[in-house]
Image 1: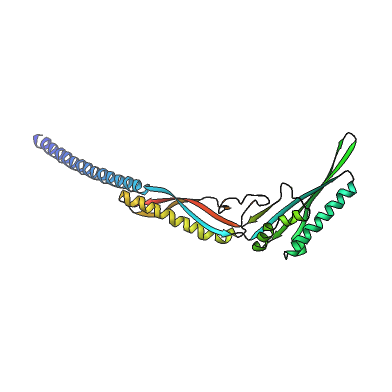
Image 2 (image 1 turned 180 degrees about the horizontal axis):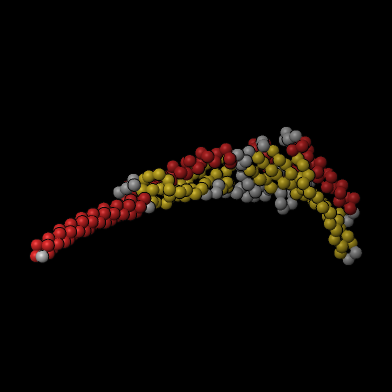
Length: 249
């Protein structure tokens, strides 16, 4: 009986030792896994933080251009107690205006009527008729349009009185032709600003994280011309501002 009991205790002891070794090995592997996982997680978070490092800057591009379309609105009127006389005066003014532009070398179809109206006013039984008319000159010959504006007082000498609302307007219609180059120029300007920031902070500028193109503005280069009959200038300044977010490496 003693030998049989001694044999069973020995076998149980061996099984316990084996079990403890397995548990220790598992615990060791688990510890290594936790350490490795913690390192990878920490390294991943570091990389994520580095990826989030960026700087947002603005880039500017400007370009001087010359308008390629001129539109001159000419408003005039006549007053009379007799409607037929008022109409006759308007017709004389219209002939004088057309003759003025013909002498400057404009074709007949360059000048088109854009509106007319007749109103009447009674005061103590006396009626006064007023006829207002508008003509519009549209041309791509900018130099000739400027010459016409410079001689506008010749119309006054011919008896034509220009009303408020008369004035030349110059338009630059080829904006789409220069948009790509100006956006690229503004982006380069933004990168230069980002590079300066990076040098000051001891980093390098990476790729573009995001970018927003501002709107294009076309304004008179030297401000509005002002003055009677002049509301604009053919010399324009095109401007665009882009906002770019660069990664920092």
